[in-house]
Image (cartoon, rainbow, N blue to C red; front, side):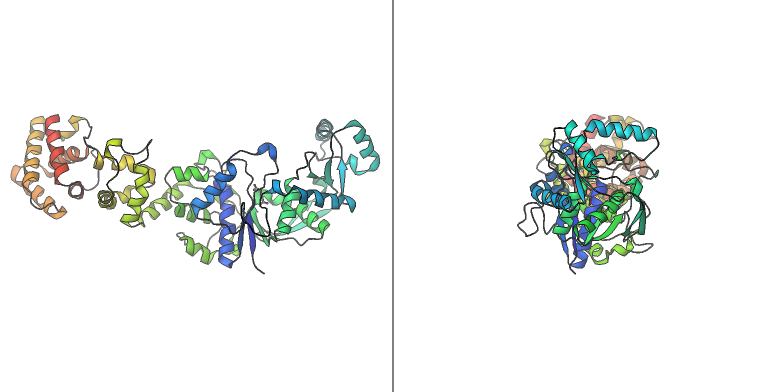
Length: 485
Ligand code: GLU
């Protein structure tokens, strides 16, 4: 059997991380087995559609490198892959169930349904539909009250229990009396999720349905639908809930955002993939760091757990730092260029375009401190700025007065001008010698130089910084500092 799995998003907004976790697990399983990964757009709830969200969802998949074999626009036999382009199929299926006596037209108005719900609530009964139209007399009466097109409802068993098999949880049993005759086809001619999902999973020959646990309550309905059509049911694999660290429902409050927001915050796609893969899956008790290829190699549904996964943004930051440190100087420099050149949040215009080789020499100094690519403009700006702006009082180290600081910086300038070797080791040797000869404490001398050449009190190691900045920049910055003093 060739594995065929699908990611079936509804285009109701930006793809949330929890939702993309489903995409990732399906993709991993397809790639692990040499199967097929399908993207199907479930746009049957017209009221909840958000224009543009199909493209955003596909962009998120592309950014994460989750390529699909079949999906919107692909010219493969199981298409089209957008449900609103498949309406005839759902109508046919609903009509077939009516003909076979397994479904019926319901004419009840929304007002009546509402009244029934309220009444049942008062009587402490399950609030589902009271099945008036399931009997011909009821349907006739309802039809007289409502000239609008009917919906189609599925005839559920009235009592008993129903068991479905979930790959992760084993047998799960549902009380049928809590499940009403649910709608298959709405009065606007669109199918409900249940009908379209079952019909498409069958027609697209889906072998495994991997989706979030919140869809588990739909499983008994789906099981009966498969039986009614005489279709074989795919294997169900429900992925555990994702909670915030406080064990409440995951939300923005926990730093969870749409996938593209993570991109815009400066996370690396591979770091996010690694992080998401561990939300409900693990290889063993200890391994955490996996490249995408390693995930493909190891991913099996046997290692998916039923207990909720905890979304911890600090863990994602940790992964991101790790992946940043794992990049070569050149790769990281390339990745940083767009952030530094960004019109809104990047470096000042007069420093652009970024000198790519200079940037590659800066990267080793800042890599350790960089957690998100978006931090780069602020963190690296002093390397690029023509004139640094800082408070001149910072140039005066503790224990010295302005004259003392001026003396220290004048000596530092002379040393810079006279140096013929600008390597880290030579700089360190000559500035330590200067401190000794002049009697200024190294802490004071180095502190004043640091502020003069970086404009900051905290920066990467001083002599590496001087070396990367180059003599010309250092000399002119020391002069500017003396002027400022
Ligand atoms: N359209 C559903 C969603 O948005 C799909 C659920 C499923 O995979 O069956 O998550």
